[in-house]
Image 1 (cartoon, chains in turn blue, red):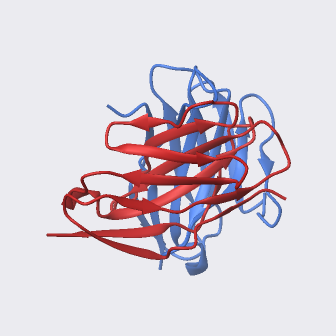
Image 2 (cartoon, each protein chain N blue to C red):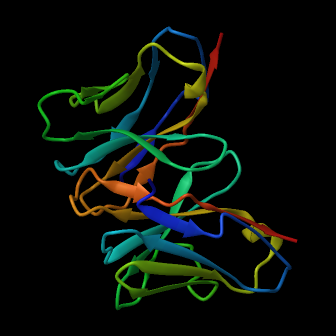
Length: 116
Length: 113
């Protein structure tokens, strides 16, 4: 079964509104989680590193005020897309390293965001 | 800078045949990990296989094997006995012990009867 759960799997929102995506580790604690974005027919690009109890670390070119990341507990990270625009429509997916590091990186199921 | 290159945008293979998906990487760090993931149309990322830079032997996981040639900086994925369900996007990725993954551009594999 899934060890990282992501919700919602699909969401449609109106331009200008905000939408929150949750990434939850099941049965293990994740002090660090990662958020990726994937545009159609493209690869996954790391957006930010979510750190439990501290600020997220954003990759170059990612607007931190637009993509708010909160890692309030050891099992939950949230990504909020604020003031969404059609160009934010994408596939967002999170990952978390497992307890046996190095070769255990779990992904959530991903979230398809459509901004209309 | 670290980089993953997948030069095959698309590959075709007949059912039950073997196929090799190419991946080269670039890093000056001696410690790294290489992954292959399968992404079906649903979007989920399915872990296939992992190779550590210090691993002496090529990794194998069932029908998947990783042809690791360190001097050439290549980490090709070999799928034996292809099945129709293997049709998907395949991504090669690298991590430098930070758990952050750097992905290649992917290869779309299509298995035909």
